[in-house]
Length: 89
Image (spheres, rainbow, N blue to C red):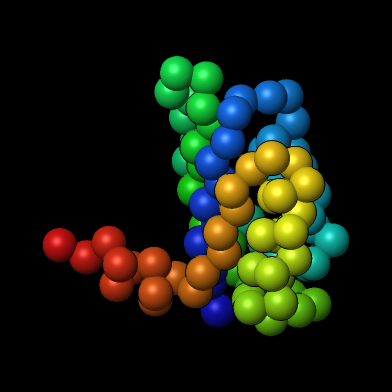
């Protein structure tokens, strides 16, 4: 089962490492990462595999939303099928 994690926020040191660390804690495999910085804002899209995850996508999404608020970031986690449907032309 795959999920997409998106992160947006003011650029600062360690954002990618923070997100990767939370994935590691949940036994979530990172498959691909795309990131950029535009006008001081960090944006990232991360493809992940939840096959062996210790919690559901929904549970992890709730955790990451709260984690993002603490770090002044907007973090969203969604099943890849939903992400693909939202971005279909």
